[in-house]
Image (cartoon, rainbow, N blue to C red; front, side):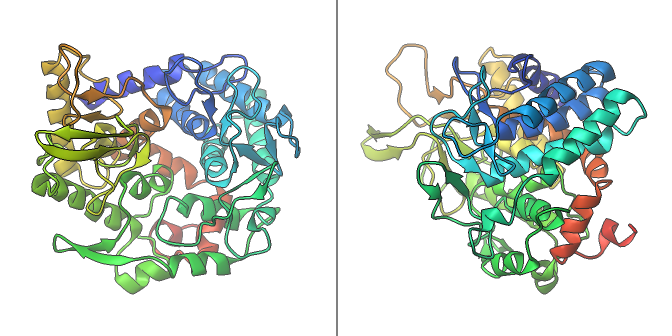
Length: 427
């Protein structure tokens, strides 16, 4: 079952790529820009694909070098149509030109996800060939030119982003648990522009410990927050100051969050269709809104793309089955059953057994014939990547073990205060 899901998900990274630049589309919608985070996932997916005979090593090297050299040579500057600035890159890039798209922000978190893939490639391609040596050389140059100190904008914590028209965004990675674990690890481990550990300590001091359904855990509503950094970082047995105080690690915390989401599906406090033990998974996803509609005499609000979360919302009845798959390493005893249920659902609808919908909403009313609920018309790279990487980490720990060989990752974790586990055995 998992191999079928792997093959189907990998098709996204076969087809949604510009072969000239290596850029990966954000989604399958025609005209979609590239997402730099999806590119970071692709670079890690190519590593998996070699080991699973989905790509030859030579083809994976070609794909990797193409996109790394594109980023190395693309224009960095303060102009509004550049590809990046100060080593960072814009959230979305034009698939054809590689320039900034949609007037988006220079994104610190999306650059971090891109760099996680860049460093995965550098760690994996350790051979003596000229091509593999070039991968390592270009990857190093991309990471080392990122000016994390500039992204502090005079503070101690990293800003969300920057726009050439207006400067830094008014938000920082400084409040509440989020996907920024990978960002701070990279910023702390930089050999050229490292930030001070104090900003990380200030951030984790804002984390909210909650008890939900008799489960105590570090709260964040959307599942992707409990997964994103874990695509690359193995948090089993390693603890920072927050973990040591609570007596767990972030891996265990993600296991507990997965159970919270399942219980939310069982209890279904808002009475949405399709919620049950195996009908769960709230995360950042596409949706049927914005709309306010009457459903069986009850007025319900529906959202478009938003970070849905459990148990405190927002929630409009939109389920993302891929998000449960991405929790596979944390709680396989419940995730595998949920994946099987999703596969059976696809079979009953006459779909390909392993091409999961990005999201669907059985509560949303449809007026068109033969449609019983809303289904996202697009597939997203940021959904397919976590499916592939977390299946692989569950089965072989490949991505985790590969990134552990990166000295910058090790340095960043140690400067953040992580101790124990696999870090204890490294020089």
